[in-house]
Length: 142
Image (cartoon, rainbow, N blue to C red):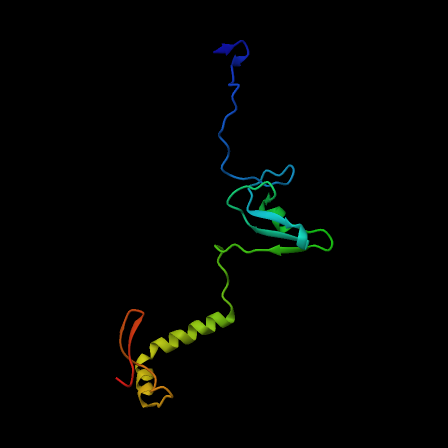
């Protein structure tokens, strides 16, 4: 039905809501990327990845506001990292990976050396076969 001013609008509000949650800061319309929660008993502000559901006691923040977040004097800010974000490997991780690659490249040397050693519990197991990343080991006693 139309009036002189144009089409009539429905008096029933629409249930369609944007699936994108917005920053809780006043006058900020950017999409939220993090959730802020206060732990009053510990005087701690916890900033973590965006929560699955919007909670009334939590605040959703955009990237800019989450980076600039400060807490009141005497409070601690705990920033939880997102598990899905790629983390940079440490030097120890890279060294361990290099050692594992070197070790896997010479399985015959290790198997030959293990047969000649005397162990406290009957010696080390001997590698007799390999399929992909799986190894078949035989005890020197058998």
